[in-house]
Amino acid sequence: MANCNVKHADIFIPQTNGAISDSLLQNWTLQALECYKIKCDCSKCSINRRDYSFVCQMPRVIKNLIANKIKPDLSLIMD
Image (cartoon, rainbow, N blue to C red; front, side):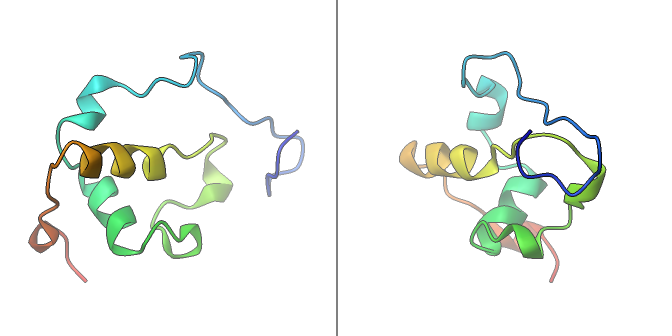
């Protein structure tokens, strides 16, 4: 079992062979914007990791969005 704060929880790894959904790579979601703004620091993320058992893909999503020259609009998220 991978690092997980919930006792007896299994980590869910999507059966996508590591592929990220194309829909996530075309536009900045609010969650992607937040992650970008906090420089992928999971300790500052609004998603409480204790409530989810997945491997976060957001750093990979952000890397792809930037590589595809899709600019983030940080004015869409509040401080």
